[in-house]
Image (cartoon, rainbow, N blue to C red; front, side):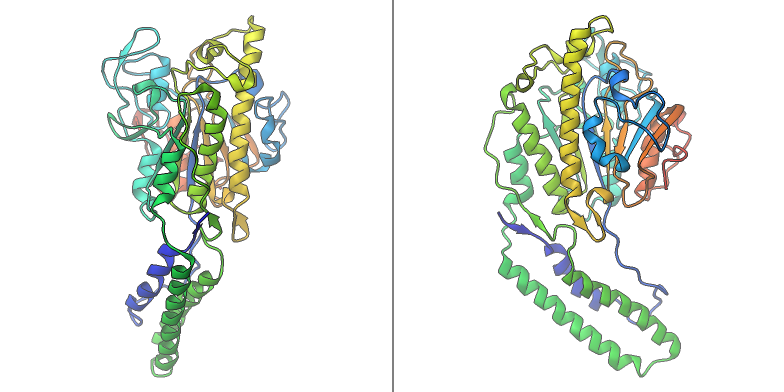
Length: 442
């Protein structure tokens, strides 16, 4: 395994310091650079059975018992926000059947365009009509990394509107990469930097800092009190750079995982293995600061797959349509949803295992679990099963079960944008936007 650490930081730190004008206007207080915020979107198809997803009856905001499907997340409960009462209405205008509408709207907050994609009931529709939240944020705060965003998939098995979540813009979908070996190659294959070169870079940057420090000492004695205050403020930045050369940074403790074997993404018997690899690559990509925006798409709105690894061989889409009277089918589907929850826990466990300052990578990340429907057998978009994990560096108030009264899901997207420092008033269709959801932001 190859160490992936401070390359970009080391190359830029010294030069940036030398380029700063020492006696021009500077902030009165230089603060240490915060760890970056990240976003991971985790998608599972066709909604949930509400009785197995939402917290148990009698649960309240700060004292709740996770439902059966989410029970594997108990160890992370203080980092969760379980929501209830968010409706996804913005996608219901325009063409398309519920699965098409849900896939196109969940991250864009818009309806579908007209088109020729045939839905499950024969309905015709086109692509989504807006940019997805991950791409909106990547454009604004994701350009400091080598890869602005990373789209991952597991058994997506299609290339029309029911198989796409991410949009660069209207009718511009981004396909998820379903092959872990090629994901690994994109992330790590061209990183040939050795430990010796990194050590040399570190020494060079420390030498630059030594020069800057001596310049400060010599100049400080000859300037006015006003300029001395400016120099002292800038010296705080120098000391922070020096401290960060010694301390772990995003990617500092990162080890690139072993290169995965080239596996057939369409082999249903390898679904569990593919999922493990994609989750682990997502964690490594964030830990190595290769990207800060990731989508992990588990199947799609069409979702005609089986789960041999669970000895569950019914078509998943069919299972999602089973009503209350079909107890056996609903139980089979619950087992699959619990397995998804276990993969979500694997993601949270991995992020929580990476230290960043006094916190962890998970604490500086927002993980959003979404679906295209609220409930498969009703095809409803009301009371969507949206779950948040991680606070995004303290931007969200976690450890809560938040019951809402039919707010629009566009406002959830707006809330997340605000958590990333983007104070937008609308996202997607303005008719379904009122602003950030009260009480979610810290």
